[in-house]
Image 1: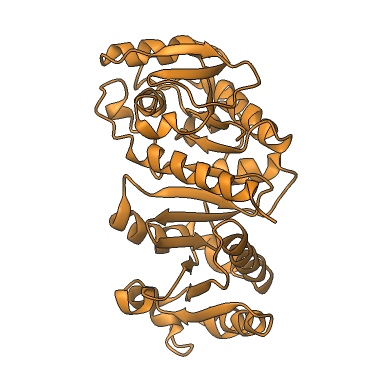
Image 2: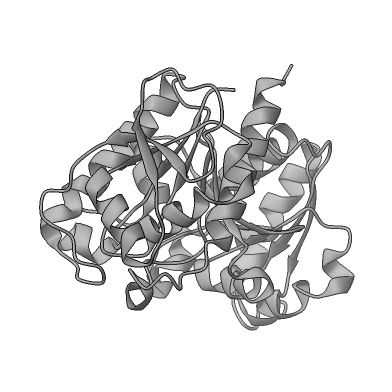
Length: 330
């Protein structure tokens, strides 16, 4: 298996802490993997909370898992010295360079999948780089692909029709074209990447009570329901539009493979309540496999050794599983 590649994200956040902890987890000895980061940052951060690491420079030919506590590292230095929990715009380009190297390596077949640690969007933007999130950045780097954000916690999978938009802009973005694209990508990747032969997808309405027959909004009548009907005719197994406040109940979810929420804070609070700390963010619609943690940089925990690596472990495991499935695809 070609190695997985990890980016640790914001250097002042908990990303370096989590990767150091991952190196001592049993799952990290099951698959070959490479970290793109500043070696001095990683060693000093781990030593700060009493964890030792053995770093070996990436040779370009890793095919076997590393021993416990060992990290194969592809070194990219930070521009400025890093102090845990202290953000510095000087290091914004470092974060972007690690992402660019990981994506490009995946695109040319050097790596089988990438796992990303949390970034601090505000710092990247303050440094003069327009950045709305990993999802959009990766899509552009992959040739303007159409990404779909999917978060998974166990059997609960929630995808988003729109991602990082102000709430006042969401309604205008709920179009037939967008929903068609998102639902076809979601259906395709659930079949191909997750090996679900005919995924059943529940589709949320946009408005309270899914519009209440038009009395609380017409997006369901004018856009969402007609798109669902058209895609059903194409063979997709879709149910909706359903009110979001009742869709996320056991009766509805019992036989569903995924949910499509119309906007970020419609679906993700439910998923994170159900599985925070073990949920995984997966970007669908890309020519590469990418998973990520379900949380932010947690600056208050950086360098303390108290950050929970559960989501990174889950993201690592899922990336490996998806990469393994892809290697045996017909």
